[in-house]
Length: 617
Image 1 (cartoon, rainbow, N blue to C red):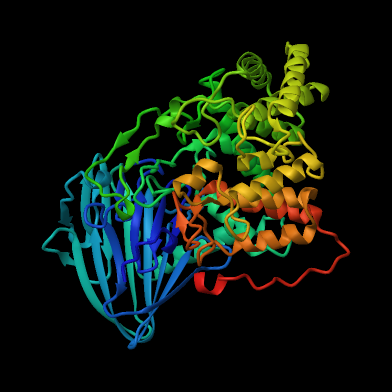
Image 2: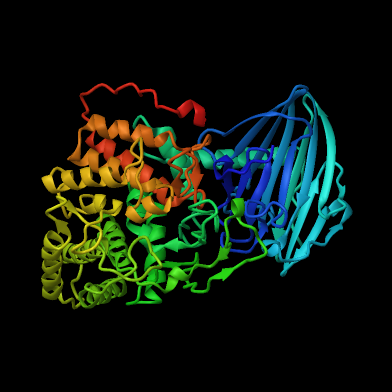
């Protein structure tokens, strides 16, 4: 029953870290105490060395699973010839001012036999520090099974008997009859004394409180269109990837899940990419999550303040630069895809698009609040001055390639956005009392406009192109209308869309990022298909065409509604790190664009049958 597919995982979390749970009941990935901490379980990167925690029937089973509606609480149903077991997995969400003591971290797993009699197999194999540390598990009696590493105490408590396994870890088997339950609580603390929550009915009380908390949060979503289920699932995934104490949103919960099976494009995405800022802020504001959007933009301002005028490509959840990249040769990698990396050397790259993303996100905050602190305005001016001096430099671009710097069209577009938004803030009177070189901002903006209209346009191809004076296209060109540079209904955008579809299209509207990906055999990039939906909704195509394209994109989610970074054009399965915030932000943005464009007097079309949807489910 061991799955090998990224597609076969779901995610649970608590706003500090996240765990991946496979269809066969294995926790294959968990980093504590934070998203970017060393792993306790990394079986998804190496089943033998990485470690996992498995709860599953002893006999073969048919598996179905779902999140409880409007929550991040996962239920997996195992149906055997002898009966049915249901496993509920979650990280409990605690009230901010609860009077009850609670562990710093907890992963709770509750099992119930719903029919017949089923033998439950348990295997617990923690492997701290990406499998590099020795796991000495001690029997603490009523205090549970205890593992100490790097100042943290990990405690597993269960109300079924466990015993040490010959190869390390713990194993157990318990037969459950209809109505019987079993409970498992794994906690982590770096402070004494450790809080060990009670099991039994108290476990189910934590389940109920967590379900209620998630449903209260989901109910705040103000999107009421026909795709609410997919939109709310994406919002819940985005919330799971948000580091509660700071508001930072990490790109993904994992590291080194490959873009190409057996390839070397295996990167650590457990950081917050500045590139995603504008998209994330717009998505959160569009759904009505103003507090989360403001927390995220405030985190951006704090993080970039520390490095201004330099803009980091990404920051960690506390807003610090993390430039060190390390390879872990002892791990075989997912499906043999090496190397496994922690940290990301892209931190040292120059990505000029970051300036436009941050300033656009701050402009969204200013439009709603009507004010910015004077220090924040001064920082924006310094960022704008940097853009006026550096906009003509070649850079690594939005996709942070490691093949050298080029004069990317999207980087120029983002520099234009940065100056356009600063001038908008000036027109709104936001810079009163703060000296800003407005005329210089205006002059450079006009130079960028002219260069993009001439050198970024290839008249022979009748398309905007990836780099100045080039002849290749890139999916990021679809965003020229999203940022307001070009009208989506213009002949230039329509013909650029046609060229992108011709050169980067796969099937069902899936798109590669650029022509390099086509030749290297990578997957289609998830967010790019949703960008296309947004462009169509804005007028590059008909509303019916946009909606049909959106429904085809929805079919590539896995069985619990989650997306990775990429989609295999051959199988439709997930590739790359998982779940990917950028893809879910793209889904939300496309749904909002569709709703804005929907002809209100037109009756809702019935969803057409999507080829292959049943097979993928």
